[in-house]
Image (cartoon, rainbow, N blue to C red):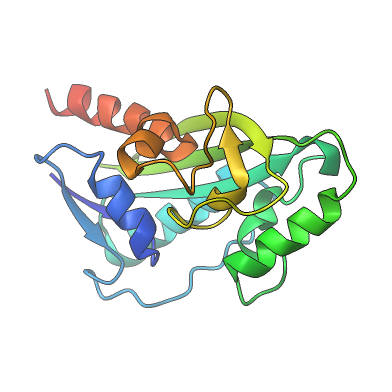
Length: 193
């Protein structure tokens, strides 16, 4: 089965490829020669994931899934949330985003947060949604240089290390994206049988 993953992010693509069974041929936006910056104009992660998947399906006529992920920090009333990638500006710089978040949490005791990923799948004229959440805390400084985005400052509950320090296999097994993609994969396996 061929499926397009509507992303330009090579880190994300690699992470998801490791989770999918070999029977699914994953195509990137680059593979289908889609170089458009698909606007994420939704008010929620769910809406943004749907917008991206719908764009590819309607423009290219291909089965597609897309995700949108946000970091939701309790003390900031769910911010950065849907604006996680561009929290410190449209340049979407991970270092700037982390620094802004750390400065906004300075002096606060409540550092609870969770990552949430929504996956939207368009498959043979039907639409499906899958959610993954992982709870944790925001550390006071960057720890580790693995992963991407906010990984060096997010420590999942039950672990002593941040996503930036954990091996990718461990992170993928417990992460928000991993959990959402696992639901997608389970669905695809049932769908194909």
